[in-house]
Length: 244
Image 1 (cartoon, helix red, strand yellow):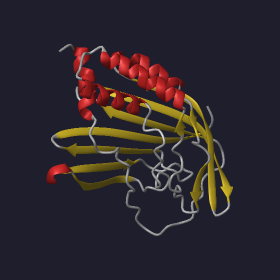
Image 2: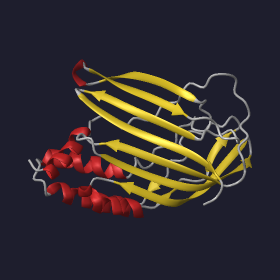
Image 3: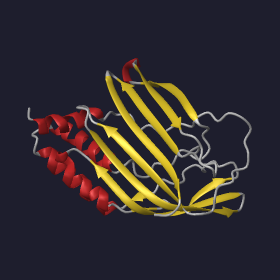
């Protein structure tokens, strides 16, 4: 099998029947205090990294100019997309261009309560259906050239298009703005068909807080162990003071 076929077949193997893992809430120690964010403009970046089975990665970073504002019983975080960076193996270059041009709707504003907790379901955004269809069509064409079996072709197409689209519609972690610095570990068992079990491990690392009280960097690594397979995904959030 060619290197091209190996890479894309590996993408198909990574996709399991289990739904994408929602990042779970980290433990927040100590009493809850009123959240007091800055009201000047900030730069928020979100990077999502998905590992393919041969060690290569798909990496998508989006940067937003954001600003907090007071609202009833809490705050609103409004913003706009200012930059997109997509890094993929060369074979997926045409798909990466679609991802760079993808528009998000419904991302902002994000509602936040007085403790800094993001209200459930906020911040996910939606992907334009036409862009999603274009991504799927291109993924199908690229994978079809490898000659892989039809069942793997279907799985591979879904994996590549969903990975590049960074799980559109998935909400932001509700504790994103209030996780204390340090390392936080969690794990849970997943029941599989036939009585087998899998495991999901989540490690959250938070750097020191900025002077305004927001975390400068939050990195969450999710390792999914299912039926002898190991899937790793990382999500990195950063806040920077000032404008572009």
